[in-house]
Image (cartoon, rainbow, N blue to C red; front, side):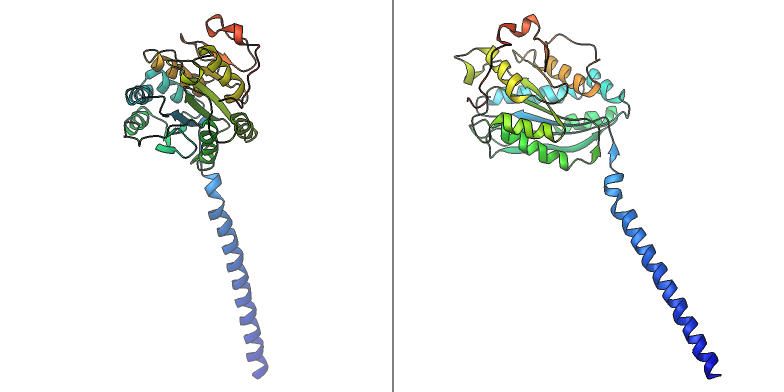
Length: 285
């Protein structure tokens, strides 16, 4: 009888051990199934887009309002919305921040998934928030570094990551802009530009063309990088919408009126081709 009870206790312990082992294996499997999805469950989109908008003191309050309105209108534009919806996944992830000196980068609209007309309009409404007053200086490089960190916080994943950066002058604070640019490109981020030529204060003595050349040689970078210029606030919405359509839909999109300046290609006649072979010092401010 004692031998039978001892044998029964051994079997009971053996059964408990198996249950414990199975429970532990199940817990490990559950951990990996729960822990992994944060990466696996990120929504697949066609593009992760960071909009970085210059609001330094060379752009006055009325111009900042016009600039913001251009983005508000862009995400209500049929061209832009169609380019989003006609993508392979029919969705993009987008965020918008404003920048000036190395100490000022302000997120106006955080990462947002846009996959419908309604979501694009909602993003447009969110863009109408009031921003804080910026610093005097212009640090394109700090805006780039800030944007690189934003990409690590994206709620979606895409084969294409684009930083869309606007500005009316050169980098005059922080890291050298070409070094920041090269670092972002090494992270798989394409940088496109929107140089504002309405009144390029910093390049007044050199002319508008030099701001274009500065963006070409020092700011944009990565496969297929390009910039589109805006020479007046009247043409800004059109240039911006063209730029967004090209970024979202790709280079096969039907071009609009504004000239597109692409890495590795010759500038079109209206893009001041006489400057294209000049070398520009990216450390200049």
